[in-house]
Length: 482
Image 1 (cartoon, one colour):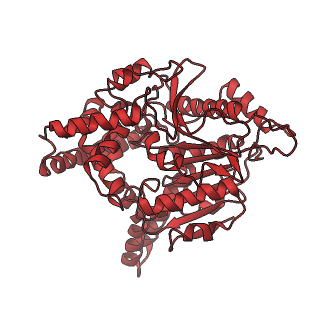
Image 2: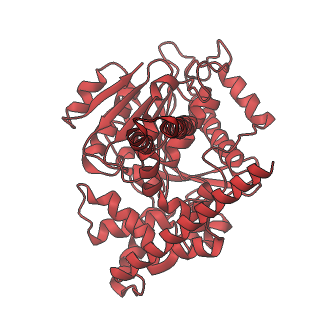
Image 3: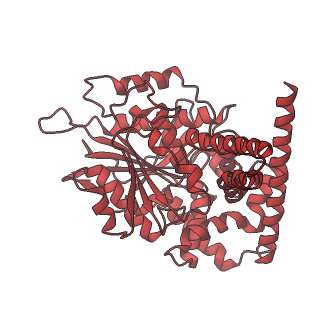
């Protein structure tokens, strides 16, 4: 017991130390480029105000989609946008879920795509959700963030299934619509967890540039175990101790690289005041830095694009919080309270409170909903046909998954995130590699087109996936297929 306590203490000290070092490095970077003492010009304020109104004004929605709210059983409200709120018997229900530090806005190109708005002559319902605590959605309270977010996401998906999948499917010739979940970053991690723990929710999960928690944990254990074994062998070896020691250090290379790439997460786990300052310093320097990375590949970082990216990250302003949808709905009070701060603390709760691997304690309502979807012979809902019995390693996925991976990702080491993924795949799953793309595959111009073709393929299901992608991304390849 004492050794375990000491181990945890050492781990915490190392984590805090690395977090503090990274925090001061961020301070240096912000000071070096002038952001630390930067004062926003009137021009930039006006551009941000225009962008926030464009993205978040409920009274003047986009011509291509509508703002709406979903009220959870606990009374909290989730904001989402939808291309058509009145479709009867759609061909597909496609749900898009973003990650840090984004909102529904990263999916607007998909919502406006003529290739996705219909499949086989029937309309698709396209929905982009703001995760709890992001954009226009209310944050969640409670001790277990993992349970609360997964419960909310499941309730939302069940709710929109119930709304859009009934229609006229019992009429002759009408087929049951498919449900497709599309996730990036945290939306990807949550998608992995649903495909593992609630596979009935969707017929296919399309997930991009984030790891499956049990696979990443297994790769971490494998690398550290190999390191320990090789170090022990090198100690007792007379002739090859140096070469074995070098090889042992090499096994840790993916872990050390990943620690460097995800150094910002250690900052997010510093004491709350420091973590909050790291997000707000230099006029939201860190958020602007993330947006610059996202827009740098193929998008000029012009004032309009930069302003819209910041508006997406910050959420509605005070003016937008006074607006209402045509049916009289408005942003919840907590979103108004975060209008000036951008809700940064809500966003980093996902890193601080165990969202990655925290246990999901399913409620009775969730268990009943999942059972209802999975009933054999049900004609009112579609599902992946997955069962509840896990087959394979811990975390094995029970629904078809298509991974879209940008190989130039600056936040994730591919070896830690993807090595061994085939062992976790269900049938009809694959990995699509995009060699010139980075982390934000849904935003970067070239990868965005390839990503769109993957969603189109999932919605239609008849054409060859590899050929469809290579029409717009010549070097893309499918590396794992099951």
